Length: 209
Ligand code: PRP
Ligand code: URA
Image 1 (cartoon, helix red, strand yellow):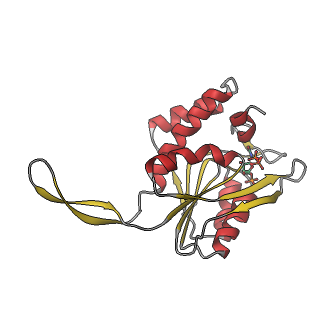
Image 2: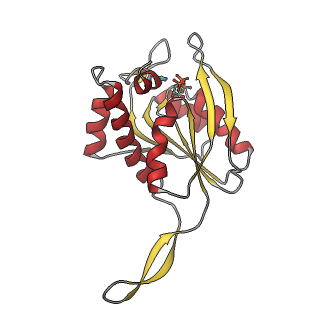
Image 3: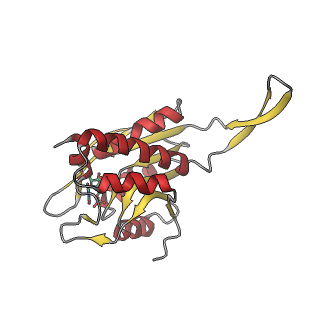
């Protein structure tokens, strides 16, 4: 499979964390910690192209010119509910980030996502990181990208933990210039549109429902 916009996290720690997330014996408290850890790794990976600018400083020994992040507004947008579990690491490493929320829920029978909530800061001219742990059919991701794209976000990046090839293809079909950062590209969807081997229902496992 050739997915030009897919960036797969390649790190032994990511493999370790993903395996424990997948394990059905992992309980919600541990699941939440693992979710934080993998999301932190993804946050670092997905922002590797953020612009920087020079800054003159003095170390205790001599003056030097370092680099710091250029002041471009960054907005992280979790797709509720499961995406909430991925937000904290972005807040921890980018203290000036703004947070918006898009609520989407898949219908159990059709797997088509229904929108139930949207609260966004101004995103025009901003870099937007859409975060959702599961990219299955891609229906939720495309709906969420539609929303921020319609509000003139300059630069949209999708960050997921586990992706199905079907979902990546769907996003690339609708938005070929949106990069997708993920920690695992799984085999396929099952008849109920769950990812195989996957990890089950992320939201249920995160919140013990
Ligand atoms: C899950 C997941 C994604 C969506 C992915 O959410 O968090 O948002 O399914 O599936 P898709 O690619 O086929 O659209 P769900 O709808 O189960 O809601 P939840 O986060 O409230 O559990
Ligand atoms: N949503 C999930 O939480 N898991 C899947 O496998 C597919 C959609």
